[in-house]
Image 1 (cartoon, rainbow, N blue to C red):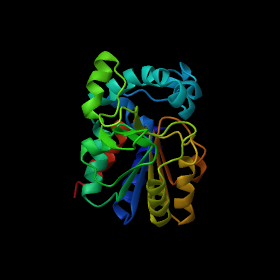
Image 2 (image 1 turned 45 degrees about the vertical axis):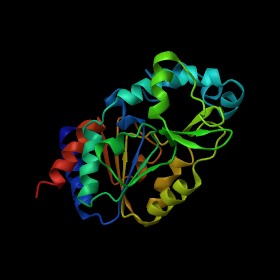
Image 3 (image 1 turned 135 degrees about the vertical axis):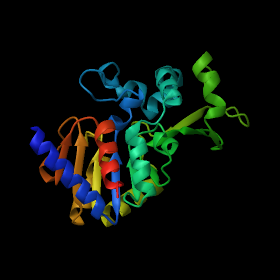
Image 4 (image 1 turned 180 degrees about the horizontal axis):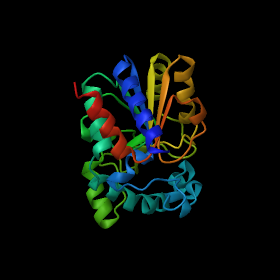
Length: 256
């Protein structure tokens, strides 16, 4: 994108954010890669270049070969626990706090939006922050179990019934969290602006959420390094690093 076009697109994005009353942001792996968390689908370094997802993160694998799942999860869990919010997460928290973003819908399981201070976060693909026993269904905070898991490879078990504790991240073959999904669809149907930040929009059903917003007449701002299927419908496309672009937008919006 030529500098003149980029400058004009930036101004238009700032104008749309300033004018929003029901702003929603949809974030994907690209917003967390600057924090050191690998994404899944990039051509060079995506996790699925090295693993078959159905063999390591499916519900069937968890049930019948839990050690395979936990061996795959261990280095990723370490990255997530050590990761800190980057300027993009912080910018969204600032925009939320100032009323320009009402809800953040995220495909990420890392909890970095909450670490940055965001309050209204819908984790449509679940989270690693909690674990649920597959036998008695008791729920636990993962921080009490992940240190021995990461350092020694000890698979977490329920202190009450000794069942394996499953991270509350959504696996292949598993349904999305129903209540969270309904809330996400509802806010998309009501929003007047959707910002898509760092999502390739390749994973259904989440990739269809922007359509709900467009059907409501919402404006669409894309901040991404790569093209998506919805670029043709976007009001603004900012091609580049979300950790650089979002803070610049937030700074301009909040300048007054």
